[in-house]
Image (cartoon, rainbow, N blue to C red; front, top):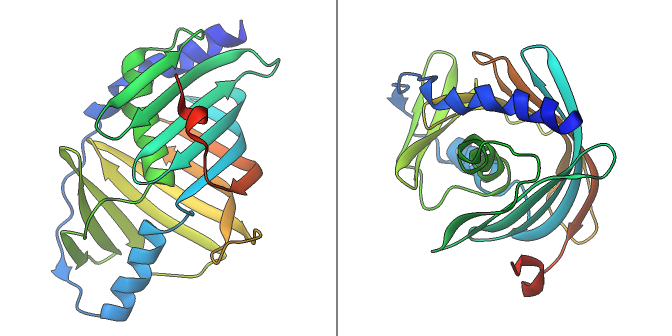
Length: 232
């Protein structure tokens, strides 16, 4: 029954790509210190290689489903994400490899494949992998400063309200593939061997679709991920 609930929750978000938003226009930002600070927040929130475990609550149109997520990341673009239900049953296992694309390793939860390879994969990349290359533009609007990048075949825009850069909470919006996500990193903590602090709580929300993810970090380990962890 739990798997059926998750499947039902994830079917409708397949239309996230239809939630379009106009491209944000603004005046160029010339302050190099401000730009460097915002780029660091976008491009280096996590170390180059790590594994993590999160407790996740997915809310879609008032209905909730809890699961545990396991994540392996190795830059520039290798990652693997696994999800398990409350009683340990596997929900999905997906991975991405540079030059080889995305692969669905397991999908016993019978979740729509286009959701796993679309919005789910996009959210993972937005949260844990930095955009490739330099920002194509940095502009200021009346309400935010926007860094725009190219990723794959589409644009990726990070909007920071007022350019605020406090570490207690990092709040920004991301426009990707026609979907707009509001993201908040908070409860930053130090981890051995890391220069930067890592957020222990993440909220991802698509208000138009009434979709929200609340993620609490259970375990975080900066490490070189062995190749066999990605063997499929």
